[in-house]
Structures are given as C-alpha cells and as structure tokens.
Amino acid sequence: ETGVTQTPRHLVMGMTNKKSLKCEQHLGHNAMYWYKQSAKKPLELMFVYNFKEQTENNSVPSRFSPECPNSSHLFLHLHTLQPEDSALYLCASSQLAGDADEQYFGPGTRLTVT
Amino acid sequence: GESVGLHLPTLSVQEGDNSIINCAYSNSASDYFIWYKQESGKGPQFIIDIRSNMDKRQGQRVTVLLNKTVKHLSLQIAATQPGDSAVYFCAEKGAGNNRKLIWGLGTSLAVNP
Image (cartoon, rainbow over all chains, first blue to last red; front, side, top):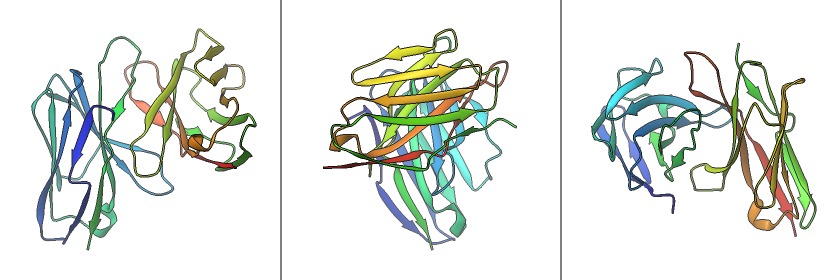
C-alpha cells in the first residue's frame, strides 16, 4: 500500500456520460497530481495541485475538470469523453521540498470510453 | 526538445543475475533523476533518486549511476529476483522555471526462473 487510494479501479463510460474519479492520500503531502498513462507513451502529467491550488495544467482538454477540495482529496470530473481518452489514470502525491520529488502513486483507474 | 529515452524497451534476465537498465536524457541542465518501478496492476513505485552533483548512489540491491558527460543514467539491480519483474521508468527534473518531471517510455524487465 502506498498511502494513495483511487476509486473506482475500473470504469467504462459512454461518450455522453459524466463520471468522476476520486483520489485520496493519507500521507500528509502538500502536492497532488493527475497523470494519464497510455500504452507506448510516456506518462503524461495532466494537473498539479500544490496546497489545493492548481499550479499546472498541461493543455488538458476541458472535458477533464480537476477539483481539489483539500490537500488530501483530488477529483477528476469527466464529461463527453472520446475513445482516445481510454487509458490508465494515475493519481500521485508528494511532499514538495527543494528538488526532491518522490511521488507516491495510487493503483490507477482503468478508463474505457465506448 | 527535452526527452528521456531508453536504450532497450525489453530486458530478459535469469534469476540471480545482475540487471542493468539504461536511460538517456537530452537536457544537460537536468539536475535530478528518479527511477520508478511499475508492477502489473499497480502505479509506479519510487526506487531511488540521484542529484546531478553525484555520480553514484546505492540502495538495497539497486545502484543508480549518472554520467553527465554522455547524459546517461543506469539502474543496476543485483541478484535479480522474480519480484523484480516490472516496467522501469526513469524521469528527470529540468532546471529553471520548468521543474516538472519528464518521464521516459519505460523498460520491461522479465526475470526467468
């Protein structure tokens, strides 16, 4: 167990659905991240929150909407997704301090868009 | 542009042998590097990191070597075990204002019993 949990573990949704991914970290970290992991591609950073403030948005389409109500919880709201959005969505947290960036990852949500 | 790549996409070793996973990076200004391991069905797990002011760092059964001259990073795993079978990623942190991690594609390590 890494101290980062994600729900659901698997999600199948149609292109017109609205769903949300949830992430919770029990490590007391001050930063949380959403990544997209697709086959044969490097891990893609989507969003970064530092002390609940969004500090990074890597040109992510607006059909992905993050929410960070507190430093322990992170959501990714999904609506009108495309089949190419099917991937493993990983949440991570870290304690930002200087250069070190040891990120702790959850198990991911395997998303399939039909 | 900035990129982190791997020399070998797959590596197969015998149990008990030493494994070496290589990584090349293109940003000579990067000053922090990390290795992660991802087992099937799990998220990446931190293994070891190294700063650019070092050329070697050792952990438990793992050693990371950094050669800044040729911009090369390697992860050595001693006495490889079946539990080491996973995909291994290197990541670099760029210098300057862009301090986010840049990830490589990953190398799949298969340990044969």
